Length: 323
Image 1 (cartoon, helix red, strand yellow):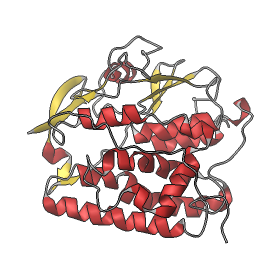
Image 2 (cartoon, helix red, strand yellow; image 1 turned 180 degrees about the horizontal axis):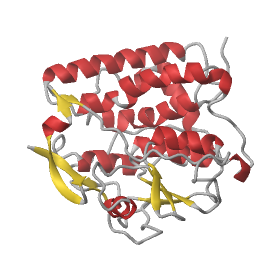
Image 3 (cartoon, helix red, strand yellow; image 1 turned 90 degrees about the vertical axis):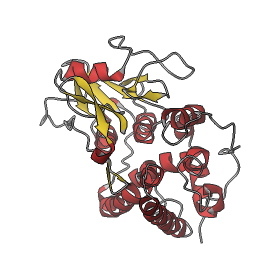
């Protein structure tokens, strides 16, 4: 049974489940465009205002982190954005006309795969967001979110007044250690749980996920952020998963041992970060719910999008001081 389609040499082909799982375990494929923008001139991709464009989904947690960085670093006037429709069909993302969506501002493409093929007519791989596009050379610079956010963090500093470093040298070892577990067990862990195809694979991923959430809860009992009192890359990589947790992962992905609101520290931490105006403005729960419940027919065959739950990220929290 096919689970979607993949571009192979410019043509769509069905993907067999065995390409995406091992004994029922979900496997995430690596991103293939891995160029870097460098301010020091060591790359042909140099930071220039108006040169680059982001293709994103407001529903996708991986794309979400790039929007957070763009907002925190005040790069809205430097890097333009197009937003795809929340519904992702067999052939991945398309441009719609729903609230919060935009057209493809550059080429008026109907589907994101057209952008991939414009960059490489023989592209073979998945069509994913985010995409960082170079308008000058008309090609994809990078489609790996963890690398895009590093570029946004430092390589555009001459084009913005915000010099905050979310990956400072003195915290890098700590951030990298936390990122490794958060990526494997939480960011990707919810997908390993939700897309598992055997009971064994589901329970294995479920236990790993909640062990990691317990670990994070304990860290946040002692300090405001994951690396201390400073908001860092580790927090920005975790937040998109947490803000989606109760709305979609608890029910849709069967991550239901606990809700986020059942973790006092994680819940307060999520609200604390959400209430940073630049970050809260990037959250669109309607797009999030529409995407997950309508795009995964193998999990939700009825395609009904639930009305709830009611989640108040603006509620007061207690994250200001620690003993």
